[in-house]
Every structure is written in structure tokens, then in C-alpha cells.
Length: 120
Image (tube, rainbow, N blue to C red; front, side):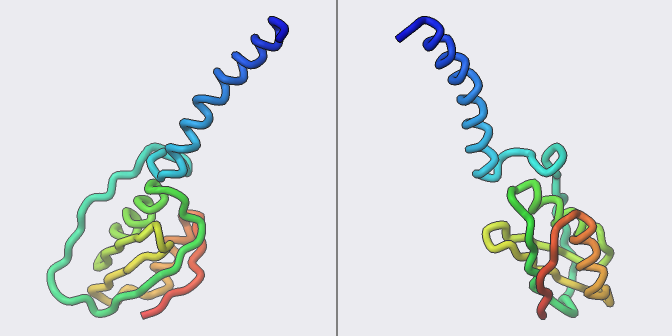
């Protein structure tokens, strides 16, 4: 093997190792992809029984940061608590007042995800 071949191999390794580590972190849902730092989701509980519970199917979530963004924004709606399951691409949305279904859909889609179905 020629010395220049060894240099090329070394440069490729220097580039590929961090890229592979980053990909593995991202695919495990541990990276902060999707446009920013990891979102923090404050815990939200509302006393009483929800008037409605929706199951929302969402396309486009890839990692924990995506999940956290959806939960955080759902929980910012007055009278709503959202719990997202990334593995199923769904959200359970507990509605304690008269929040319209359209507001839930709009909130999620404003985050650049697609709501494919909402059911009670």
C-alpha cells in the first residue's frame, strides 16, 4: 500500500467515525435534531375527569425532541394534556374543557408534523 493510500484511509476514518456516532445517537432518539436544543416538557396535570380523550396519529416525528415538542405545545393549550408515544407515532390528548379538535390538529401541524387521523 502506498503512503498516499494510508493518508486517504486515515482521513476517511477521521471523518466517518464522528458521523457514525452522530447517526447512532440520532437513530436512538437521543440527539437534538429537528432544529434546535432538546425541548423540556414540564409536567402538567389537571384534576378531574377529561371530557374527551383523542388518539392522534402523527407523521414526521423522528426522535425524542420531536415527541417533546409536540407534548410541550399540546400542554400549552388551556385544559389539554398531551402524552406522545414516539414508537407508535401517536398522541393521547386529554381534553378537560371545550377545546375543539381543530385546535389540537392546528397546534401539531404548526410544528411541521402531519396529523393523519384523530379519533375519540
